[in-house]
Image (tube, rainbow over all chains, first blue to last red; front, side, top):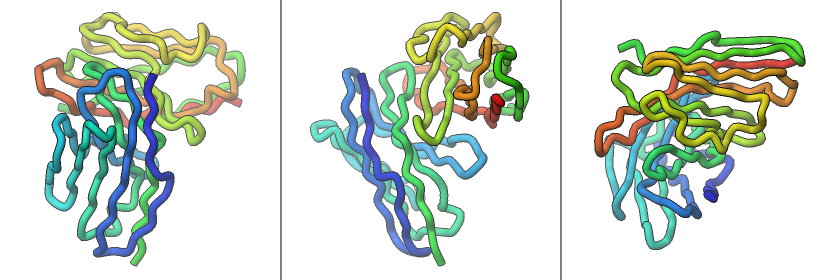
Length: 108
Length: 115
């Protein structure tokens, strides 16, 4: 089976940096994905890590350590529009299995 | 491309009624996934298809749920009979089959309320 753990809620100030951690246990692992979901919307793809290390895409970066079964999403220069839920998901080679999500609130 | 299309966007039904949710994946995508999202359980994978063939339905909660994909451009998720605990947002997603393709594209979801 699979399990993913991430914090349920995080609050940060506009302009700050926030890190959302994800630990996973799985019997089959190809990579770790991150998705963003605004209230009432659909999940949208942010990043994918198959190898150890940091992947940067604009203000967002994602990190993976396969040996530690650990990853994180780093959001820099936070904006109000970044308030949303963020999901880590393990890619098993065919499908994604998602964590429960982290609700990020960005305050002025 | 219009993206993944789902219908209806909202469905309110009474317990015991049959509910059919519909999905049109992105043209050319080989994989189609059905997810259910609730506050308590998060985003759960129910079933997925590859080239219209069901591959893994281990996430389907019980026999009341069934899914079909009669062709590459259409899939249905049916609940019969529906129960109040089936109330959730149901998402359909699709993905290309090319190597190194990891991004899943989600539809807008169907919000189901069973009273």
